[in-house]
Length: 150
Image 1: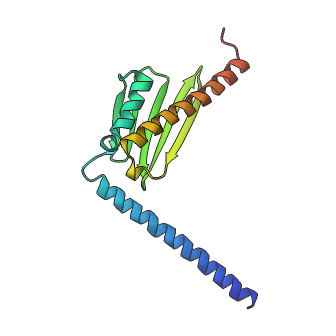
Image 2 (image 1 turned 30 degrees about the vertical axis):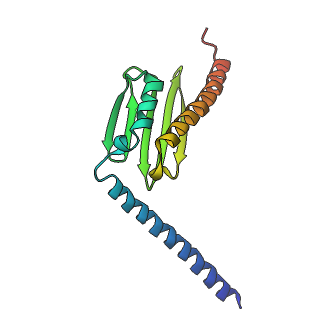
Image 3 (image 1 turned 180 degrees about the vertical axis):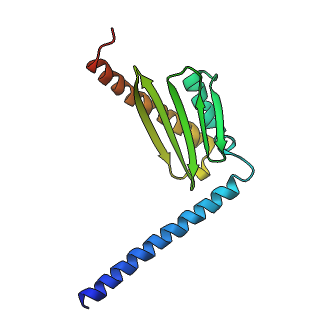
C-alpha cells in the first residue's frame, strides 16, 4: 500500500467514528425528549435538587426550572447557587460559591444519569458535598492567605 491509500483508510476510519458518535448523540437526544415529555429536570432529579436545597439553604431556597433540561436552586441574598443541566443522558451540576467576592466553581458530570436510582443519587449527593467542601476549604485558605480579612 502506498501513502495515499493509507491516508484514505485513516480518513475513512476517522469519519466513520465521528459519524457513529453523532448518531449516538442524536439517539441520546431522542431519548431525552421521550424521557422528559411528561416531566422536567426537577421531576426527574427531585431527590437530588431537594437535597441541595436542604444542605445549602436549609430547605428555604427557591428552585427555578427554566425548561425541561435546566434548573437551579438559590436563596435570595445567598453567596451560592447550584445549577443543574441534563443533556444526552448526562447530568451536570455546577455549584458556585462566593467567598469575599472571590467565586469558586465546582462542577461534576454524571454521564449515565438517565438510569439514576434514589440510592445512587443519595450517594452522588454525599460525594458532591464532600468534594465541594474540600475544594471550598482550599479556596477559603487561599483567599485568607492572600488578603486577611480580620
